[in-house]
Image (cartoon, rainbow, N blue to C red; front, side):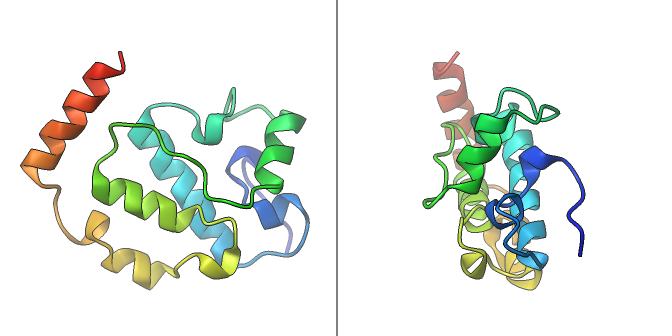
Length: 123
C-alpha cells in the first residue's frame, strides 16, 4: 500500500518506510485529536502543511510517546497517548479506542472546569 495524506500526521513507521497498516491510521487520528484539543499543530511542528525535514525526522525516530500540552481533558489525554504510541503494536485497534472514556462517555463538568483553568493559566 502507498502512504497518502499529510506527512506531519504520518506515523513513525510510515516515515521510516517500514510498512504500515491500520495502526498508522490510529496514529493520524491521535494527531487530529491532539490538534483540535491543543488548538495547535501536532507534535511541535511549525505547520501541519509543511514538510519540514527536521520535524519529520524527529517523528520517524520517536521511541517514546510525545509530551502533551497542559489543559487537555484527562480522558482526551489518555486517548491521545494511546493513539500516539510510537510502537504500532502498542496502538489499540479502533474498536478498543471506541470503548475508551473519551469516546464512550461525556466529560465530567469538574474536569472541564479544571482544564479551562489550566488553559487560562498558560495564556
